[in-house]
Length: 128
Image (tube, rainbow, N blue to C red; front, side, top):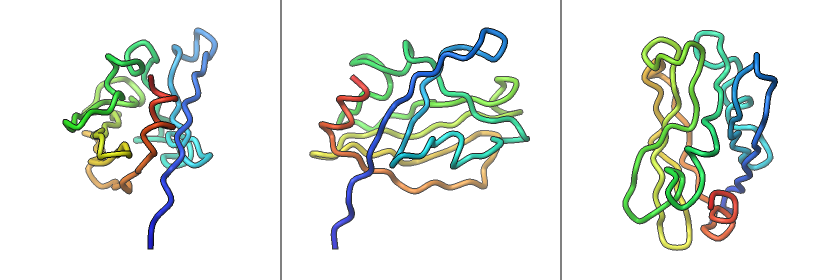
């Protein structure tokens, strides 16, 4: 039995200045990962995506290579990881796929997320 790869979309949102900065919202299989998977976020604060200038492009931390590396994709609340949280994942290229795994939040040790596997071509079209 083979599993279908997950589908990644990245939504760049530009809230009003009093609501925060420009952020990348990962949309996985049609669902806003930060809003749907983590409603309300840690401590009642919702996660905010990291900015596109940091996250995207060939030099950005979402660029997948054969060497696994951890990246922060979101932060929450006050911005202090140990207080309100941040969401990290490990990114790696595995042949014709890109894998997201090893999810962690320094303020919430109890959550677990499944491994996500994207086709490399579709993933790179979004990230690079």
